[in-house]
Length: 529
Image (cartoon, rainbow, N blue to C red; front, side, top):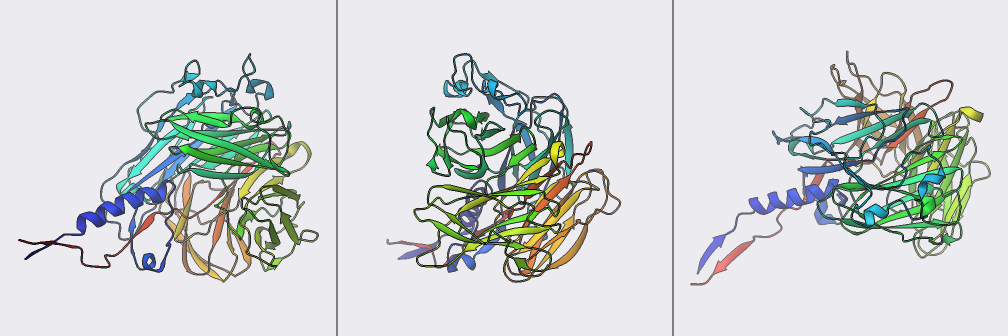
């Protein structure tokens, strides 16, 4: 009998590549069992990001900032990172200030009909094959401005040394009209399931969900909206076809005849995978991008409520078969308190609950903590988001903070400015220690790092460090060093004409590494002569 031993090098390399892609394109990088905890963690080798079309307003300007952090011990020497324009497949009006009349064509049909017909009559190619924001080396951000209306959605990939932690920030300023304000979003990885609590079909709001397909085959997504009494009645087909490497915007109020504020949208990819982002615009209070909530969980954290918030509206949805009873707490600078009059929240199964918290922070920064209130039976998972308003009267501006997952290792917010950035760190359990690093600026400089300790049950809102002698937008990376879980968000303020224009981005873990299981046995082949 001859015994031939098989090499595991190729198998481990292939597994690292496959799972590395999954970690940045919708798969989970969490350790699912004790065996996985002992696995070797390797940098992901490829990641995909999708940026929605920013605005078709003639008075808008958009800044894009791309960045990949430097990583100690990184072995990859080569790689590329860049984005290409997607094609638009919609007759719909995607200008937030265009008015509800643009949501249907002359025959009353939905504006996304062009997508369903394979793009006939509604297809406009943005064209071009020159990558946008190509990175030259990790640790140095690149930035570009887009001042023309109708800028396209972008589809990008990064591989090799640029893949781990690659992030792209899109920040749009609209100077006038109902969409006036700062609309910011971190470009997101494609996935198959998204929850958006806090959307609206009300007449005072225009909410568009932008669906982008990064792949070379068509994708199909189902859109379902849930209100305070359950699922809203559909007035049209809720299934949307997204052609290859294309984007489709859908006005949510065209999906139902029911008008309701503070509802929940679920986007599910029936075939393929998509990127999903909601652009929410209030006719009186500006607007922003509404990021997807973290996956349903029995306890959620909404980090970084501004200290000067004049109103906050909490929206929670229970997707499971059981009702959710939640304890509501506000983690402030010194401790956690229960907001007066809002000690608890009952959310019925399959329904959306919304509650106005007013000026809940009372002049101090904070974060909302939602935990099971107790009682009989298992706790029910929920998704949640907070609509935050700053300013008063005609000078109001709105942003959204979704429930945000904990930073396991690191997370990055790109496009920070010399003034106006506030980083919020919350430790919902035990005290935690983090390192915050400001990258070099887009126009030079050197990185600067500082270490912070966040006491358990508190929120620390701070101005992040600035790069040494650096100019231009820069990135801020948060690394958890020790202690309990930490959640984070970044607020960027760009006030204009007396309006406190701002945007808030959550900082979920960048999933820049993936667990590769160690071989647990001798994989060999026995050949009998």
